[in-house]
Length: 413
Ligand SMILES: [Zn+2]
Image (tube, rainbow, N blue to C red):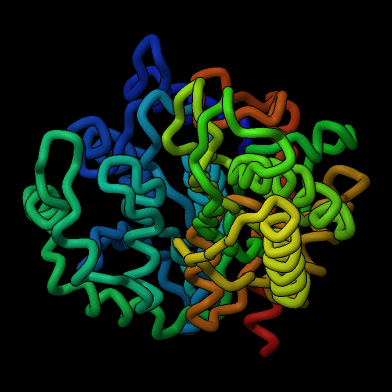
Protein backbone atom coordinates (compact mmCIF):
# COMPACT_ATOMS: atom_id res chain seq x y z
CA UNK A 1 0.00 0.00 0.00
CA UNK A 2 1.89 3.06 -1.20
CA UNK A 3 -0.38 5.63 0.48
CA UNK A 4 0.92 6.29 4.00
CA UNK A 5 -1.22 8.73 6.05
CA UNK A 6 1.16 8.29 9.01
CA UNK A 7 3.96 9.80 6.92
CA UNK A 8 1.77 12.88 6.26
CA UNK A 9 1.11 13.25 9.99
CA UNK A 10 4.82 12.84 10.80
CA UNK A 11 5.61 15.53 8.18
CA UNK A 12 3.06 17.88 9.77
CA UNK A 13 4.67 17.42 13.19
CA UNK A 14 8.10 18.06 11.71
CA UNK A 15 6.87 21.27 10.08
CA UNK A 16 5.25 22.35 13.34
CA UNK A 17 8.51 21.82 15.25
CA UNK A 18 10.45 23.81 12.66
CA UNK A 19 8.10 26.81 12.21
CA UNK A 20 6.25 27.30 15.50
CA UNK A 21 7.12 28.93 18.80
CA UNK A 22 5.34 28.81 22.17
CA UNK A 23 2.47 30.87 20.66
CA UNK A 24 1.83 28.66 17.64
CA UNK A 25 2.70 28.52 13.92
CA UNK A 26 4.54 31.57 12.52
CA UNK A 27 4.58 30.82 8.79
CA UNK A 28 3.31 34.24 7.74
CA UNK A 29 3.68 34.66 3.96
CA UNK A 30 6.65 36.73 2.71
CA UNK A 31 8.60 36.24 5.95
CA UNK A 32 11.76 34.24 6.71
CA UNK A 33 9.80 31.55 8.56
CA UNK A 34 7.55 31.02 5.54
CA UNK A 35 10.58 30.75 3.26
CA UNK A 36 12.06 28.28 5.74
CA UNK A 37 8.86 26.17 5.50
CA UNK A 38 9.16 26.16 1.70
CA UNK A 39 12.82 25.15 1.98
CA UNK A 40 11.82 22.26 4.28
CA UNK A 41 9.11 21.29 1.79
CA UNK A 42 11.73 21.15 -0.99
CA UNK A 43 13.52 18.34 0.82
CA UNK A 44 10.21 16.46 1.06
CA UNK A 45 9.51 16.31 -2.68
CA UNK A 46 13.03 16.05 -3.95
CA UNK A 47 13.06 12.24 -4.20
CA UNK A 48 9.82 12.27 -6.24
CA UNK A 49 9.75 12.13 -10.07
CA UNK A 50 8.28 15.65 -10.30
CA UNK A 51 9.25 18.97 -11.87
CA UNK A 52 9.04 22.07 -9.71
CA UNK A 53 8.40 25.67 -10.76
CA UNK A 54 7.08 28.95 -9.36
CA UNK A 55 4.59 31.04 -11.27
CA UNK A 56 4.81 34.85 -11.44
CA UNK A 57 2.77 35.24 -8.21
CA UNK A 58 4.99 32.95 -6.12
CA UNK A 59 2.70 29.92 -6.25
CA UNK A 60 4.80 26.76 -6.02
CA UNK A 61 3.92 23.85 -8.35
CA UNK A 62 5.04 20.23 -8.38
CA UNK A 63 4.15 18.47 -11.62
CA UNK A 64 3.99 14.71 -12.06
CA UNK A 65 3.84 14.55 -15.86
CA UNK A 66 1.25 12.14 -17.20
CA UNK A 67 0.68 10.59 -20.64
CA UNK A 68 -2.00 13.25 -21.16
CA UNK A 69 -1.56 16.99 -20.58
CA UNK A 70 -4.99 17.07 -18.90
CA UNK A 71 -4.23 17.98 -15.32
CA UNK A 72 -5.68 17.14 -11.93
CA UNK A 73 -4.74 20.02 -9.66
CA UNK A 74 -4.42 19.50 -5.88
CA UNK A 75 -3.65 22.43 -3.64
CA UNK A 76 -3.47 24.19 -0.30
CA UNK A 77 -1.15 26.65 1.47
CA UNK A 78 1.94 26.45 3.68
CA UNK A 79 1.47 29.98 5.05
CA UNK A 80 -0.26 30.59 8.38
CA UNK A 81 -1.61 33.46 10.44
CA UNK A 82 0.68 34.68 13.25
CA UNK A 83 0.21 32.39 16.28
CA UNK A 84 -1.68 29.97 14.04
CA UNK A 85 -2.38 26.26 14.19
CA UNK A 86 -0.43 23.31 12.82
CA UNK A 87 -3.10 22.04 10.39
CA UNK A 88 -4.64 25.08 8.66
CA UNK A 89 -3.27 24.83 5.12
CA UNK A 90 -0.41 22.48 6.02
CA UNK A 91 -2.72 19.44 6.21
CA UNK A 92 -3.86 20.01 2.63
CA UNK A 93 -0.25 20.29 1.47
CA UNK A 94 0.98 17.14 3.20
CA UNK A 95 -2.09 15.13 2.17
CA UNK A 96 -1.59 16.38 -1.40
CA UNK A 97 2.05 15.30 -1.31
CA UNK A 98 1.01 11.86 -0.10
CA UNK A 99 -1.48 11.54 -2.98
CA UNK A 100 1.22 12.66 -5.41
CA UNK A 101 3.55 9.95 -4.04
CA UNK A 102 0.81 7.37 -4.46
CA UNK A 103 0.18 8.33 -8.12
CA UNK A 104 3.94 8.30 -8.79
CA UNK A 105 4.38 4.82 -7.32
CA UNK A 106 1.24 3.27 -8.76
CA UNK A 107 2.06 4.39 -12.31
CA UNK A 108 5.87 4.12 -12.16
CA UNK A 109 6.31 7.86 -12.46
CA UNK A 110 3.89 8.42 -15.36
CA UNK A 111 0.13 8.35 -14.65
CA UNK A 112 -2.41 8.55 -17.50
CA UNK A 113 -3.09 12.23 -16.70
CA UNK A 114 -0.84 14.91 -15.22
CA UNK A 115 -1.06 15.44 -11.46
CA UNK A 116 0.01 18.79 -10.06
CA UNK A 117 0.26 19.97 -6.45
CA UNK A 118 0.22 23.72 -5.79
CA UNK A 119 1.25 25.58 -2.65
CA UNK A 120 -0.66 28.87 -3.01
CA UNK A 121 1.27 31.97 -1.94
CA UNK A 122 -0.29 34.08 0.82
CA UNK A 123 -3.68 32.45 1.33
CA UNK A 124 -4.12 34.10 4.72
CA UNK A 125 -3.32 37.72 3.87
CA UNK A 126 -2.05 38.00 7.45
CA UNK A 127 0.69 40.55 6.81
CA UNK A 128 -0.95 42.86 4.25
CA UNK A 129 -4.67 42.16 4.72
CA UNK A 130 -5.07 40.70 1.22
CA UNK A 131 -6.26 37.07 1.42
CA UNK A 132 -6.07 34.57 -1.48
CA UNK A 133 -3.32 36.59 -3.16
CA UNK A 134 -1.63 33.82 -5.17
CA UNK A 135 -4.83 32.04 -6.16
CA UNK A 136 -6.41 35.33 -7.29
CA UNK A 137 -3.44 35.87 -9.64
CA UNK A 138 -4.00 32.34 -10.98
CA UNK A 139 -7.72 33.04 -11.40
CA UNK A 140 -7.18 36.48 -12.94
CA UNK A 141 -9.19 38.20 -10.19
CA UNK A 142 -6.19 39.96 -8.63
CA UNK A 143 -6.37 43.69 -7.86
CA UNK A 144 -2.77 44.83 -8.38
CA UNK A 145 -3.38 48.57 -8.31
CA UNK A 146 -5.16 48.43 -4.96
CA UNK A 147 -2.86 45.85 -3.42
CA UNK A 148 0.66 46.95 -4.35
CA UNK A 149 0.58 49.94 -1.99
CA UNK A 150 -0.75 48.01 0.99
CA UNK A 151 1.65 48.21 3.94
CA UNK A 152 2.37 45.94 6.86
CA UNK A 153 2.57 47.01 10.51
CA UNK A 154 6.12 48.33 9.96
CA UNK A 155 5.17 50.38 6.91
CA UNK A 156 6.78 47.99 4.41
CA UNK A 157 4.89 47.96 1.11
CA UNK A 158 3.42 44.73 -0.26
CA UNK A 159 5.16 45.35 -3.56
CA UNK A 160 8.58 45.60 -1.85
CA UNK A 161 8.06 42.58 0.42
CA UNK A 162 7.13 40.45 -2.58
CA UNK A 163 10.11 41.71 -4.56
CA UNK A 164 12.45 40.60 -1.77
CA UNK A 165 10.97 37.10 -2.25
CA UNK A 166 11.57 37.30 -6.01
CA UNK A 167 7.97 38.14 -6.98
CA UNK A 168 7.12 41.15 -9.21
CA UNK A 169 3.55 42.35 -8.76
CA UNK A 170 3.37 43.63 -12.36
CA UNK A 171 3.92 40.11 -13.65
CA UNK A 172 0.92 38.64 -11.74
CA UNK A 173 -1.21 38.25 -14.93
CA UNK A 174 1.31 35.68 -16.26
CA UNK A 175 0.12 33.30 -13.52
CA UNK A 176 -3.12 32.85 -15.46
CA UNK A 177 -1.20 30.62 -17.92
CA UNK A 178 -1.10 27.94 -15.23
CA UNK A 179 -4.81 27.32 -15.78
CA UNK A 180 -4.23 25.95 -19.31
CA UNK A 181 -4.66 22.18 -18.82
CA UNK A 182 -6.35 22.19 -15.40
CA UNK A 183 -9.35 19.84 -15.60
CA UNK A 184 -10.27 19.75 -11.89
CA UNK A 185 -9.12 21.11 -8.52
CA UNK A 186 -9.31 19.38 -5.12
CA UNK A 187 -8.47 20.75 -1.68
CA UNK A 188 -8.50 19.12 1.76
CA UNK A 189 -8.82 21.47 4.75
CA UNK A 190 -9.75 21.43 8.42
CA UNK A 191 -13.32 22.63 8.99
CA UNK A 192 -12.33 25.48 11.37
CA UNK A 193 -15.87 25.31 12.80
CA UNK A 194 -17.93 23.09 15.12
CA UNK A 195 -20.42 21.44 12.72
CA UNK A 196 -18.76 18.03 12.07
CA UNK A 197 -17.73 17.59 15.71
CA UNK A 198 -21.30 18.20 16.85
CA UNK A 199 -22.50 15.55 14.39
CA UNK A 200 -19.67 13.23 15.53
CA UNK A 201 -18.54 12.82 11.94
CA UNK A 202 -14.87 12.93 10.91
CA UNK A 203 -15.35 14.18 7.33
CA UNK A 204 -17.63 16.43 5.30
CA UNK A 205 -18.22 17.50 1.69
CA UNK A 206 -17.98 21.23 1.12
CA UNK A 207 -20.80 22.43 -1.13
CA UNK A 208 -19.14 25.77 -1.83
CA UNK A 209 -18.07 28.96 -0.13
CA UNK A 210 -20.71 31.33 1.15
CA UNK A 211 -21.33 34.69 -0.44
CA UNK A 212 -20.82 37.71 1.79
CA UNK A 213 -22.68 41.03 2.05
CA UNK A 214 -20.83 43.43 4.37
CA UNK A 215 -22.29 46.87 5.15
CA UNK A 216 -21.81 49.92 7.36
CA UNK A 217 -25.14 51.06 8.78
CA UNK A 218 -25.48 54.50 10.38
CA UNK A 219 -28.51 55.58 12.43
CA UNK A 220 -28.96 59.32 12.90
CA UNK A 221 -31.02 60.59 15.88
CA UNK A 222 -30.58 63.62 18.10
CA UNK A 223 -27.96 64.14 20.78
CA UNK A 224 -29.69 65.29 23.94
CA UNK A 225 -29.05 65.71 27.68
CA UNK A 226 -29.64 62.46 29.58
CA UNK A 227 -31.18 64.32 32.52
CA UNK A 228 -33.46 66.85 30.88
CA UNK A 229 -34.85 64.93 27.89
CA UNK A 230 -38.08 63.00 28.64
CA UNK A 231 -38.22 59.43 27.39
CA UNK A 232 -41.09 60.03 24.99
CA UNK A 233 -39.36 62.75 22.95
CA UNK A 234 -35.95 61.08 22.51
CA UNK A 235 -34.53 60.21 19.12
CA UNK A 236 -32.09 57.55 20.31
CA UNK A 237 -29.90 56.18 17.50
CA UNK A 238 -28.60 53.33 19.67
CA UNK A 239 -32.16 52.15 20.40
CA UNK A 240 -32.79 51.73 16.67
CA UNK A 241 -29.46 49.92 16.16
CA UNK A 242 -30.15 47.66 19.16
CA UNK A 243 -33.48 46.57 17.69
CA UNK A 244 -31.71 45.67 14.44
CA UNK A 245 -29.00 43.73 16.30
CA UNK A 246 -31.73 41.44 17.67
CA UNK A 247 -33.78 41.30 14.46
CA UNK A 248 -30.93 39.89 12.32
CA UNK A 249 -31.16 36.65 14.33
CA UNK A 250 -34.68 35.63 13.16
CA UNK A 251 -33.74 36.91 9.68
CA UNK A 252 -30.81 34.44 9.57
CA UNK A 253 -32.60 31.57 11.32
CA UNK A 254 -35.16 31.23 8.52
CA UNK A 255 -32.39 29.56 6.49
CA UNK A 256 -30.43 26.50 7.67
CA UNK A 257 -26.85 27.69 6.97
CA UNK A 258 -27.25 31.49 6.90
CA UNK A 259 -25.41 33.71 9.37
CA UNK A 260 -25.78 37.42 10.20
CA UNK A 261 -23.41 39.26 12.54
CA UNK A 262 -23.40 42.80 13.88
CA UNK A 263 -19.74 42.86 14.84
CA UNK A 264 -19.20 46.51 15.66
CA UNK A 265 -21.31 49.30 17.20
CA UNK A 266 -19.99 52.80 17.89
CA UNK A 267 -22.02 55.52 19.61
CA UNK A 268 -21.58 59.28 19.37
CA UNK A 269 -20.99 61.34 21.39
CA UNK A 270 -20.46 58.17 23.41
CA UNK A 271 -20.62 59.67 26.91
CA UNK A 272 -22.66 58.64 29.92
CA UNK A 273 -24.70 61.87 30.07
CA UNK A 274 -25.97 62.04 26.48
CA UNK A 275 -28.66 60.31 24.43
CA UNK A 276 -26.92 58.73 21.41
CA UNK A 277 -27.22 61.04 18.41
CA UNK A 278 -25.42 58.82 15.94
CA UNK A 279 -24.75 55.10 15.92
CA UNK A 280 -22.45 53.37 13.43
CA UNK A 281 -22.83 49.60 13.13
CA UNK A 282 -21.53 46.91 10.78
CA UNK A 283 -23.43 43.96 9.39
CA UNK A 284 -21.90 40.79 7.88
CA UNK A 285 -24.35 38.39 6.17
CA UNK A 286 -23.42 35.07 4.56
CA UNK A 287 -25.08 32.23 2.70
CA UNK A 288 -24.30 29.78 -0.08
CA UNK A 289 -27.49 30.70 -1.97
CA UNK A 290 -27.38 34.08 -3.73
CA UNK A 291 -31.19 34.42 -3.53
CA UNK A 292 -31.14 33.80 0.24
CA UNK A 293 -28.33 36.31 0.65
CA UNK A 294 -30.27 38.94 -1.32
CA UNK A 295 -33.43 38.23 0.67
CA UNK A 296 -31.61 38.57 4.03
CA UNK A 297 -30.06 41.81 2.86
CA UNK A 298 -33.47 43.22 1.83
CA UNK A 299 -35.08 42.12 5.10
CA UNK A 300 -32.34 43.73 7.21
CA UNK A 301 -32.68 46.96 5.23
CA UNK A 302 -36.46 47.01 5.65
CA UNK A 303 -36.13 46.27 9.36
CA UNK A 304 -33.58 49.07 9.81
CA UNK A 305 -35.97 51.59 8.18
CA UNK A 306 -38.82 50.42 10.38
CA UNK A 307 -36.75 50.69 13.58
CA UNK A 308 -35.37 54.07 12.55
CA UNK A 309 -38.92 55.34 12.09
CA UNK A 310 -40.08 53.90 15.43
CA UNK A 311 -37.24 55.73 17.18
CA UNK A 312 -37.56 59.04 15.29
CA UNK A 313 -34.26 58.43 13.49
CA UNK A 314 -33.02 58.04 9.92
CA UNK A 315 -30.75 55.31 8.60
CA UNK A 316 -28.21 55.01 5.78
CA UNK A 317 -26.37 51.99 4.39
CA UNK A 318 -23.08 51.74 2.55
CA UNK A 319 -21.50 48.55 1.23
CA UNK A 320 -18.07 47.75 2.68
CA UNK A 321 -17.41 44.62 0.63
CA UNK A 322 -19.25 41.75 -0.98
CA UNK A 323 -18.54 38.52 -2.83
CA UNK A 324 -20.95 36.19 -4.56
CA UNK A 325 -21.42 32.59 -3.34
CA UNK A 326 -19.19 30.03 -5.08
CA UNK A 327 -20.96 26.66 -5.36
CA UNK A 328 -18.64 23.74 -6.11
CA UNK A 329 -18.97 21.30 -9.04
CA UNK A 330 -21.94 18.90 -8.63
CA UNK A 331 -20.13 15.83 -10.07
CA UNK A 332 -17.10 16.41 -7.84
CA UNK A 333 -19.38 16.97 -4.84
CA UNK A 334 -20.84 13.52 -5.53
CA UNK A 335 -17.35 11.96 -5.83
CA UNK A 336 -16.35 13.59 -2.56
CA UNK A 337 -19.42 12.23 -0.81
CA UNK A 338 -18.73 8.71 -2.16
CA UNK A 339 -15.06 8.89 -1.16
CA UNK A 340 -16.04 9.87 2.40
CA UNK A 341 -18.74 7.20 2.68
CA UNK A 342 -16.36 4.51 1.41
CA UNK A 343 -13.67 5.59 3.90
CA UNK A 344 -15.52 6.73 7.02
CA UNK A 345 -19.06 5.36 6.64
CA UNK A 346 -21.13 8.53 6.86
CA UNK A 347 -20.77 11.91 5.22
CA UNK A 348 -22.27 15.33 5.77
CA UNK A 349 -22.59 18.20 3.28
CA UNK A 350 -21.92 21.74 4.45
CA UNK A 351 -21.01 25.14 3.05
CA UNK A 352 -17.81 26.90 4.06
CA UNK A 353 -18.18 30.21 5.88
CA UNK A 354 -14.49 31.14 5.48
CA UNK A 355 -13.16 31.74 1.97
CA UNK A 356 -10.51 29.40 0.54
CA UNK A 357 -8.21 29.33 -2.50
CA UNK A 358 -10.66 26.77 -3.93
CA UNK A 359 -13.20 29.58 -4.36
CA UNK A 360 -10.80 31.47 -6.66
CA UNK A 361 -10.04 28.34 -8.69
CA UNK A 362 -13.76 27.59 -9.02
CA UNK A 363 -14.52 31.19 -10.09
CA UNK A 364 -11.96 30.68 -12.87
CA UNK A 365 -14.24 27.96 -14.28
CA UNK A 366 -12.26 24.89 -13.17
CA UNK A 367 -14.44 22.12 -11.66
CA UNK A 368 -13.65 22.23 -7.93
CA UNK A 369 -14.54 20.61 -4.65
CA UNK A 370 -13.20 20.69 -1.08
CA UNK A 371 -13.24 18.10 1.70
CA UNK A 372 -13.36 19.09 5.38
CA UNK A 373 -12.05 17.13 8.35
CA UNK A 374 -13.38 17.75 11.84
CA UNK A 375 -11.74 20.46 13.99
CA UNK A 376 -11.65 19.82 17.74
CA UNK A 377 -13.75 22.44 19.50
CA UNK A 378 -14.19 24.16 16.13
CA UNK A 379 -11.05 26.20 16.94
CA UNK A 380 -8.63 27.47 14.29
CA UNK A 381 -6.20 30.36 13.73
CA UNK A 382 -4.91 29.54 17.20
CA UNK A 383 -2.19 27.32 18.65
CA UNK A 384 -4.79 24.99 20.22
CA UNK A 385 -6.18 24.14 16.76
CA UNK A 386 -6.24 20.34 16.56
CA UNK A 387 -7.80 17.26 14.94
CA UNK A 388 -7.72 13.65 16.19
CA UNK A 389 -4.98 11.64 14.49
CA UNK A 390 -7.45 8.90 13.54
CA UNK A 391 -9.45 11.58 11.71
CA UNK A 392 -6.34 12.91 9.96
CA UNK A 393 -5.65 9.36 8.77
CA UNK A 394 -9.20 9.01 7.43
CA UNK A 395 -8.90 12.41 5.77
CA UNK A 396 -5.75 11.47 3.83
CA UNK A 397 -7.33 8.16 2.75
CA UNK A 398 -10.63 9.74 1.68
CA UNK A 399 -8.83 12.57 -0.14
CA UNK A 400 -6.78 10.01 -2.06
CA UNK A 401 -9.97 8.16 -3.05
CA UNK A 402 -11.46 11.45 -4.22
CA UNK A 403 -8.32 12.12 -6.29
CA UNK A 404 -8.55 8.63 -7.86
CA UNK A 405 -12.22 9.09 -8.77
CA UNK A 406 -11.58 12.54 -10.19
CA UNK A 407 -8.59 11.31 -12.23
CA UNK A 408 -10.78 8.58 -13.74
CA UNK A 409 -13.45 11.17 -14.55
CA UNK A 410 -10.85 13.34 -16.31
CA UNK A 411 -9.57 10.32 -18.29
CA UNK A 412 -13.12 9.48 -19.41
CA UNK A 413 -14.08 13.03 -20.31
ZN1 LIG B 1 -6.39 27.66 5.38
